[in-house]
Length: 193
Image 1 (cartoon, helix red, strand yellow):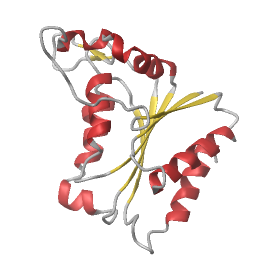
Image 2: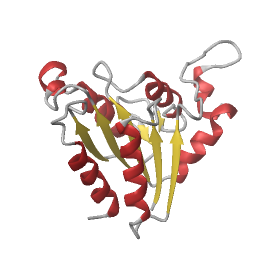
Image 3: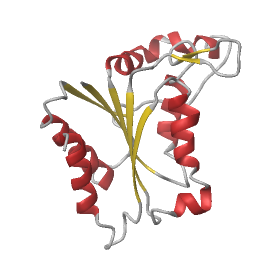
Image 4: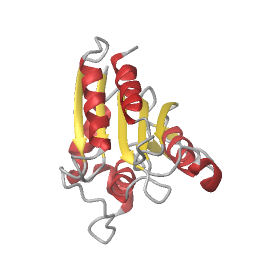
C-alpha cells in the first residue's frame, strides 16, 4: 500500500505534528505499507486561493500544470491521510483550498448529466485525523457534525472514495486531554494492530 499524508498545520511544535510523526512511525513498522510520502501544505507554501479569469478557467483546473505534481501524488496513493486541526468548526482554509483545487471535475469526478457524478478516485481510502480545543462532542451538539458530513459525503463519497475513517480528538489543550493515549491509538492503527 502507498500512503500519502496531507499535513495541514503551520507549527511543527504542535500536537498535530506529533500525530504526523506517529502516523509515519506506525506506517514504517507496518509490512503492508510499501511507501509513505508526506505533503506538508504550509511547508510546501501551497497556494489555497482559487483564481478564475480569462487565462485560468474553472473547467480547465483538472489540467492546470501548476497542480500536476499534486494530482500525481493523489493518483499514486492507495490511501490518503489528512492531519489537521478543527478551527471554527471546520478544517483550516489551507486544506480547504487544497481540496477545492485538487478534487476538481475531470480529475476526481466526471459529470454524467444526472444528479450524481462518476467518482474517479474509486478504490482509494482515506483516514482523517483532526484535533480541536473544544470537547469531543462539541461538533455533534453545536454543528450537527458538519465537519464529518462535509468530508465524508460532500467530498470523499462524491469522488468515489467509500472507505473513510475518522479520528476526531477533542480537549487537546486540556491537561486531562489524554494526548498520549490518543497518539498511541493512532500509532497502533497505522502499525496495523
